[in-house]
Amino acid sequence: AVRHRGPDGEGVFARGPAALGHRRLSIIDPETGDQPMSTADGAVVLSFNGEIYNYVELREELRALGHRFRTTSDTEVLLHAYEEWDLDCHCRLNGMWAFALWDDRKQRLLLSRDRLGEKPLHYAVHDDTLVFGSEMKSLFAFGVPRQPRSDWAEVYACLSYLPAPHTFFDGVAKLPAGSYLLWQDGRAAVHRHWELPLVDEERMRTDAVEVEAEFAALFSDSVRLRMRSDVPYGAFLSGGLDSSCIVATMAGIGSHPVRTFTIGFPEDDYDERRLARLVAEAFGSEHREEVVEPAVFDESLARVMHHSDEPFGDTSAIPTGQVSQAARRHVKMVLTGDGGDEALSGYTIYQGEKFAERYGRLPRAVQTAIPSLAGGIAQVLSGRARSKLNRVRNVGRTSSLDSDRRLIEKTAWTDTSLIKALFAGGPAQVPIEELVADLMRPCPYRDPFYRLMYYNLMVSLPDRMLVKVDRMSMAHSLEVRAPFLDHRMIELLAVTHKDVKMRGYERKSILRRTVARKLPAPLLRAPKKGFAVPVGDWFTRSDLARRVDTLAGGDGLGLAAGPLRALQERNRRGERDIGNLLWMLMLLDRFQRQFG
Image 1 (cartoon, rainbow, N blue to C red):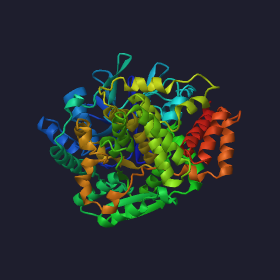
Image 2: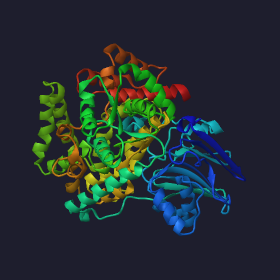
Image 3: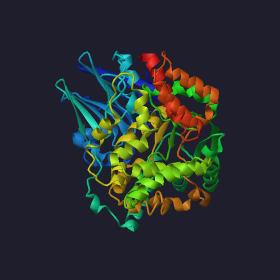
Image 4: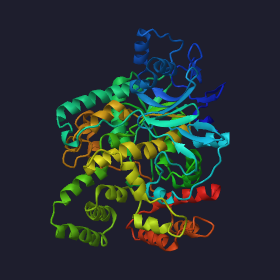
């Protein structure tokens, strides 16, 4: 069922109450790194997906403690780390992982997922058996029944994904990032092995020069560690700051030109190929480009549904799959800039949080007038000017809300009131407010800027961004490594004051003052685009109407026709691009038709 994740080999272990299976994508030690792998005495057995980047240093430390090694693989290092430090081995690892480890002496199973959730792990209990796998399709292949839940539609339509531990299938769970599950004596319990460092938000680090120096050193080391490979590798290059800094650093470390891969679009507003070429030329990379055309839409819809196993509405999964397919023709592993916005608090929504703080100090009458004035002027404009004024209107409208309500409104793909109305005539829904309150309950921060940082790092990064990257790269048997997600950098930046990370309204100030100084000037001046997809532009008026009719029809989702038509009208008037929302609803419709 998951052969695509590991086409280079397979292995099975079965003893007593435990069975482990593995599909291998060989990156480190292709000759002797087969799995499941056991210790010399066979007492501990491991099936491991991912990479332990500091395995060379850990191996030397373990050798000094008396351990002997038969291979040069990071898998064997992980086995010995568990033997030496038991559950404390987690804090020694620098890497991405999901692993299942059977300890025959203790008759104990350990399931573990890396700190930030780069690698997935799903599980269920079926017929008194704990079943687990990288993707849910493995559980279903075992016999776990597909029992879809219909009460997650509202949450999904707001966020485009379901946060861990939830899934669209009853009885199937995602192991949360930074967690492990222990099964022993017929009982299973989930525990945390990592959290963001706890710091008083009034005592965040403000020593900007020292922070920048530490960040630059850690960034270089993170890239160096992730370049360890026994197979050809390259890098995704989007033309944005994050991936460009990765390529610039790789070029300074490696002895051969970096192989870079870029995806573009025919629509100029979404295309960053020109900027990517500037970076490729500046650092002498072997550069290749692909263009995503509207014709891939329906094929991508099927591919995303298959590899996600449940509705997953981030449209950037389309170009991620395309660039992964292109890269896999030349390499088996790539470095990417994923996680840079989360690590550095670099999304434009953080500028909005700073603005909201200052906006709240204005007289109440001014606060009330600005959204109406901006919205009124926007009606007579078009293009970027209209988009910017609509953004001012939205920021003004949400600035008076409490931080969690503002978070919901800004992350939802359209007004939550409209989304609720879409599903009003169907089964009862889990309210988005209830879920977000539950997710944010452990958050230690009061300042909305830091609460947003917490949400992005602990919720949307593992459950949206990294799901997209993992599923669409592994669909093409390509390993992806993200230097920005080195836990040492995350822990440094999580305790750094917002005015150091964002000087005024300048995004990613720390990166701009360190690594990004090497980049071509036009790239530093370019506005942020993100990995957006012009799905709204891909629908002709007739096609849009046809798909909307299908979603409102009795044999489709059966969405409330009035709110759906209101969204369609807003799209027609240019008030809101509903392309992303329509994509999400089409995936939900496909899911319902397949399993509902």
